[in-house]
Length: 426
Image (cartoon, rainbow, N blue to C red):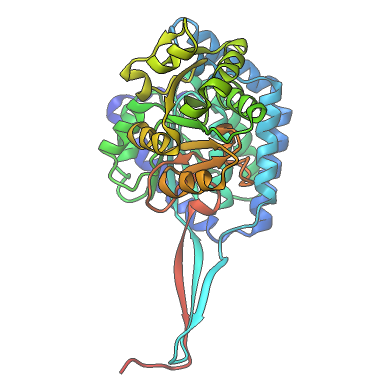
């Protein structure tokens, strides 16, 4: 339940949570694969059994959100239903089936002096996850951290507090049932933002990594204030480029899916670029399909010249992650123009190319440096579950340690084990 804690006591509360997590992480680092998997399967069953309780808690969150004039994309991410709860449980079961990364040998070699060296995966330790309106992150992050042998401190948004706590109770039951420390997965029981500041401080060395899941303001605060490493998750300003060599039917289907399947996720396409050579053949059918699906088009001047009556795009549109049924559209001069536009405006999250020309695809893959690049596939596949990772704690757009979907393997570090037979260094 939500605790009432004075602001003067929040630092003390958070430090206690950090110390508890650190102690739990030492036990988790030695937990067997079977024990961790048992906890994950118990958690999945507990979530299914508590579906009514979780949905009732979610209804409270939705009622509270109704008076706040929040964006539809925010409400969509906040909303749970029976299908989404079932998918949450299936995600935990999928994580249980993944190979345990802890202790796996990444590389091994022998030196001329006979020393045998191994690079071995180890848990990161304690991970702080700060997220906003997605209550499912409670289950996903808790499960992924657990499988990788990490303790985690979850700080969900106040808008999803009841939902997140209901899910967290299921995780606690599973930890106890599997004989693992309850402090392995903790959730901050206060809504006060001072708790975020305390978590970002690192809690006197207790926290090893921070993972933010949210909008620009949250990520900016985390990157500005964090005293520990951060897995950066910037906005998903995703592009899709349709080359003149693209199959038209494929282009229509992929673009509509990339934009409209779920508009409020970070993998939703926000900008469509069409090869100028395909303006007379591909542009109108794609835009017609988008409009039929309920999407608003914001078009450059040259697009409007081909398809009159569209809303003009402004410079700001090329820099906007809509998270709504809106897409900005421009004509570009082939792959050169597409690369130039994407490199200017992209958030380095996800980009897709629809093309049959292998040279176009090769240049797209070689010259664009976003975390995820797709060929002839929807940007909505930018997801750890779709990558076979069982789930993700976020999409990292940074270049250090983890990039793209942050799954179980990305939540580990490594150490070296060196075996000798009495060697001394001359």
